[in-house]
Amino acid sequence: MIRVGAVGDVHLGEDSRGLLRPALEKIGEHADVLLLAGDLTRHGTVAEARVVADEFGGLPVPVVAVLGNHDHHDDHPAELTEVLRDAGLVVLEGETATFDVDGHTVGVAGVKGFGGGFAGKCGSAFGEPEMKAFINHTAGIAERLESALGSLDTDVKVALTHYSPVPDTLRGEPPEIYPFLGSYLLGEAIDATGTDLAVHGHAHFGVEHGMTPAGVRVRNVAQPIIRSAYTVYCIEPAAVAKV
Image (tube, rainbow, N blue to C red):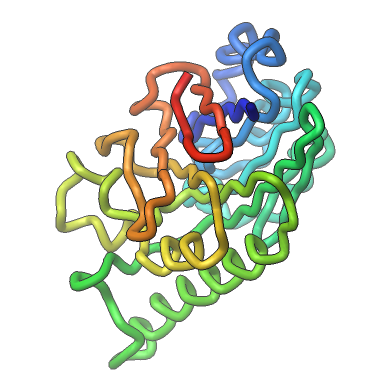
């Protein structure tokens, strides 16, 4: 059994130091790895990233993260990534990370993701250059996710994104903003690669449980949804069950 801890959208500011750390100190008793599904900061400043590094660095389990839209707001994602990696976090954008857990291998592929909408109600790369750029950006990210997941030769595969790969976990959000919350292209990448679990954030007013068209379980771990420092999922050969 692989225990995957996850949380997203913690939105830490400079005044948040010490907010989560007490709940994380004993995470090794409950999880084998911790995934951070983006929006780790409020405004994407380097100073806020240092708070994130202090909260999540040096934990007894590997910590794997992707950035979210808030983490890009100050236009310094490379600097944020450097701060987090210096603290020992693994930050992914089209890359993978693998770990050994009790004789099993676990692979995580991560991208931020982007919007565009979902099958039947989505944008297309047609018309103005701005619209083409929007959709092509998502398509490129989805291709990197599929390539990363496909490269994993592990017992368990997990997809980590900020934006949602399915509309299921967006229920409760205004339908008008679905195109800005995720894209079906991410879900197609997950379904094409034998993935066991997909974890995302971003949808503060959505729901936790969802599923891709091919039956991969999707979990929205935005902190306003899970209402805790993290949640844990157990991955077994045929099922993903919440602890």
